[in-house]
Length: 54
Picture 1: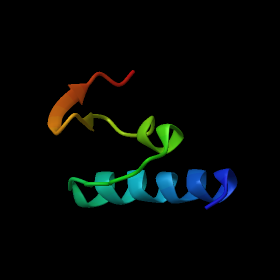
Picture 2: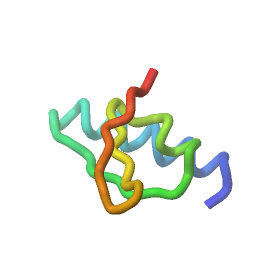
Picture 3: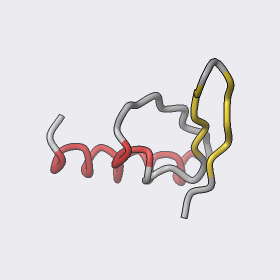
Picture 4: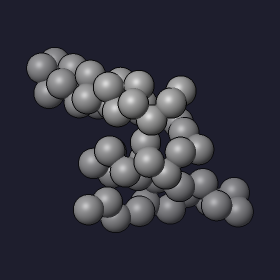
């Protein structure tokens, strides 16, 4: 997915999670997409690490 469409999808996800007061679980390799999330959990060396998002 190109950057323009990725941004549009992320805006849609954000509006849906607010409208329906729900959680979105998203798996991605994209740092750009991950930056949109409120909380990021990274898998490194077989262990999960909670990352701070700004």
